[in-house]
Image (cartoon, rainbow, N blue to C red; front, side, top):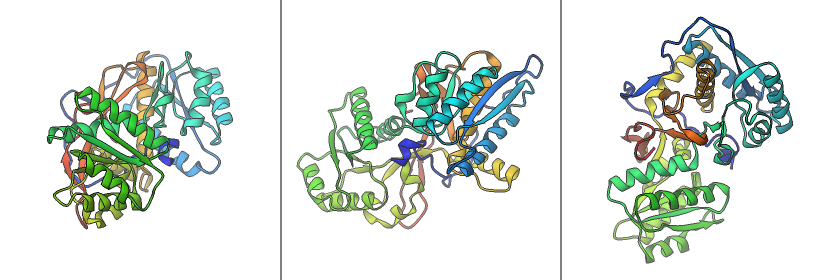
Length: 366
């Protein structure tokens, strides 16, 4: 649930060789004009309250984005949401009154819903949440969403020959969104309808794994992290003595080192931000602020960069692809974001290994 409330658990950087941006992907630093009237860009952050340390780090990241764009016309207007929906609405109204023409933030889905009730139709918003229900019109969500993760990992598994998919996930909003995304992804590729097994079980997956074995899938997406993921993988391995289906996971696996201790998860795939972009962002953040960036700071960098470009150009940059802090992104119509995610494999006792780099956003699997 924390992933839905905040941002989809954007992972810490994983090991991987630095690669240049792909052809067709622009850096945020693309030579902007520096002459002309000032344009104001709002930034909604929890600068007081329980999330204040994270809010400050995200403010730091937004300042990096402003510096990288190098456009002296852009004026940043940070405003405190106090970490509450009411505070977000009041801050959003203040920004509009002060002439902000685009807004980055706020942080949580409840703050976003409240702020958007004020800004919709008046200024584009690039929110930090991963709640896709908030997207639409002139509102984009920059968090790594369940559907982005599912599309990427299903495309990778399909390239390896998988056609029949199953989902083993908790019966909660995150699991339900994974289920909806898997149905769509399977339908788009002409695959059979997936088996959807949602449960509140956290420890004993024996019966569920045996049910899977009665109609064996080619790949199983596990929507649990931590102990749940380890127990589910072990149960599946025990129920398929002749060879288990390919095991797949979500981006929350990228920050869970305990998964490398479960033999049944060895070789399991999961999507996560490409390490090239994140390594560059982390290095820049550390040099500027002498501390490591929290994993959610990268989304603030990307959101403010998009908001600043929108203000500078007078409209959202629909269709353009950029190399962001967490890898390549492309802005689409209707509040959609195409995000290029890499695919990693769990290694027993070690760091995950890169299986596939992030594709060009908007292409297959993004």
